[in-house]
Image 1 (cartoon, rainbow, N blue to C red):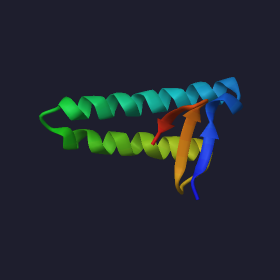
Image 2: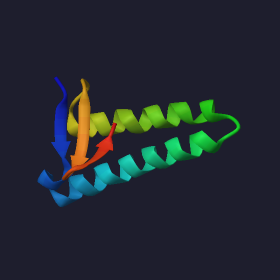
Image 3: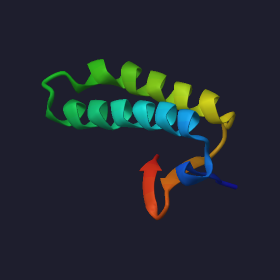
Image 4: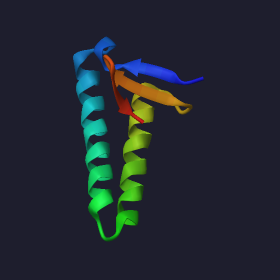
Length: 73
């Protein structure tokens, strides 16, 4: 079963920290798509995902939303 976290339900500090990690992950995925060596971004993306999962305390299926907008995965 997928756990759903809505950023709108979190305190401001936690929401900011999560949105920062989500933005870093999304940017890395975008840059990876244009890179001549996309494999170099894989570890960085995995690290961001691990940090995000630790922040919310969920290692299983996870979905992070902000209202109706899906931010993760």
